[in-house]
Image (cartoon, rainbow, N blue to C red):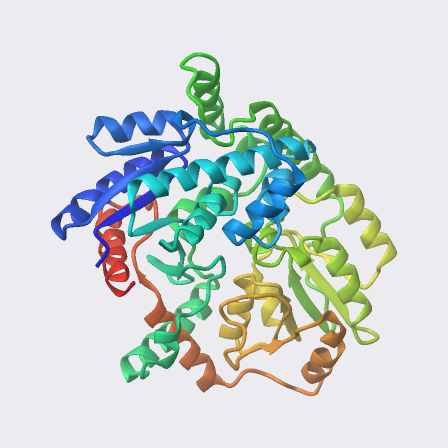
Length: 459
């Protein structure tokens, strides 16, 4: 079992949560150290007596050349360095590519230096695709250090681990394990609970992002408190942190608020009474698109393409993700709806359960709506990379040119087999482990630490 692990910290709540996990590591002889991208969090960690490597305290040479970029990509195993800073460029609207490139190169050097000097056996972090977590991932890869991404499972109070990869998929052990009647019974209960509640429960830490997005929510006490904290760190205590572009952040919130007001004019409150296929918009700035399926980053363009592949008389129903209301450009959405009468934009307050129930099929890149559709026994056409692809319960499309063939199968009555759905869910149960990163319950740190320790033991 690895004896020394590194945990990446991006915010104070993360530091506080991981600190609560450390006593459980100590009991089994695992030494945990922190790599911090937040100087205020570094103070919290050190005050508790733990070793903290603050990236802002480490000197690294600056500057770059084209030849150095190529050498860096080769040395760290990076397919294209632009992909490392793609999310920050689009989410924070940063047009200065030189700044992003220099930041990426500096972070790669800093992460590499930390890993070289500290002799870690394993690096673990929450799944994310901003520059800091991605550079730590690639630095781990360069130094042949085992790396774990941790993210919420589709099951309440559960997490999953992805070892040495940016993509999450059911591990081979879970796929090859014997399925017992107990797991099949749990799968049946999950389907029944979903049908009864009409919802798949989300992680506790994400609930704030799924609230109704009105002016009150965008200017809530929580956001005002966060703003003042950032201002205090930046201008008074002079403590550095990631995501400290306060002006850009405020402008994004304002733009989203105004867009939301205009978008209400485009919403339809009634699900169409005809044959339709449902495509749920993904959160535009989420690693499911920005890293795992960035070829589908242009969701509006994808929707236009799908609408042209529908049979005559069918409608494409779309709905914004609850966490992304107001984030898509109003003018482009409006023009798309005008030019494509076969596209129907539903009010985001409508429950996806009811949309899926009356649909002919769901088309998904990698959203959880695909799982919801499978639970309802509906056909799901998968165009991206996701953990439910290739499990015998979906129509998997390798190229958008094959979309028409998949839709033709739907017209002919294709649907997932119930027994295969049960087997898939049983595999999800085996893959998922107890825990909830940064969960609010007092027992979350213990459960998460226990599952991480068990996972470390298999590395």
